[in-house]
Image 1 (tube, rainbow, N blue to C red):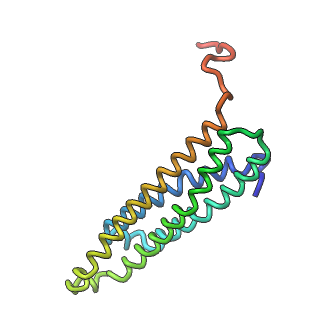
Image 2: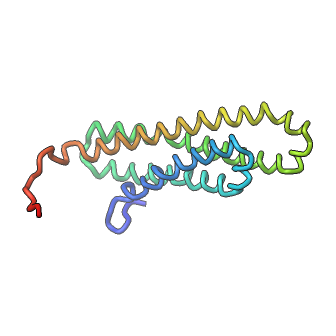
Length: 170
């Protein structure tokens, strides 16, 4: 995908990543902490994570096309390097979202009645929470770093601190 309605696809697709990856990260952490929340989210959690995962290589591919069509620039190169690192985080979100969803199904109301099943699941749940928080934080920080570098690459030298023309103020 290179152009959408005459615009570089990357500048449009990036909004999917910027919204979906942090949203998936927050949903994952909430679901990992609360089995009730995980059951309420149901299959929507891994589906959201899957859409996030798929949006990353689409956006990266469109970004590589755009990189070949703009002037060589160290800021663009830095943005592209950072962008290449998001896929493992998105894959981690998907994997953990799938496991948390599956685990919430395996520890439904019938398992709640059996105290032994819950006690044996505590170390697994703690590990899921810790991993979910770590991967979610890494993904969100990476999205921030990539977005910041992309904004710098796009806007560096593209505007003036002073207005180029005066507006009539009423």
